[in-house]
Image (tube, rainbow, N blue to C red; front, side, top):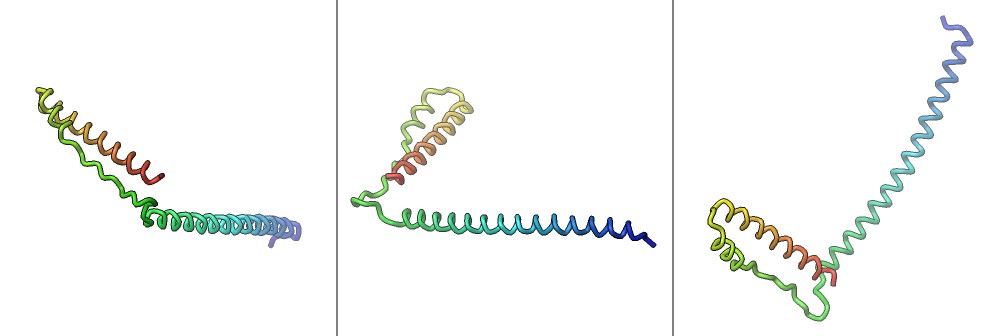
Amino acid sequence: MASESQIFVLLDHLEHKVYDLSTLADEQQQRIRQLEGDVARLQELNREQERQLKQPKKGGEAMVVVPKSKEFVNLVSSSLPDAVAREAVKHQLDEYIRDLDRCITHLSSLS
């Protein structure tokens, strides 16, 4: 059987663990409350942004859709003799055009 001093040491060690765990639990509960507040705030911000997207723009301005120009592709295909290089440049141009479309859409949504 364990001696009395060993039991006291074990109890003291157990008390420290209980204290540490209760402190950790309190900190985690506080962190949970903070994160729940952040979630609520972000959800409200998300709802507000969705409302703004759904509202028609002031002044009757409609979103301008810029058609992709095929003239660029024709110009590229006529000046490059190699089919592989032509396809690579065509693909890169398409990427640039998509990026420009995204930028224009983003800028028009800001105004």
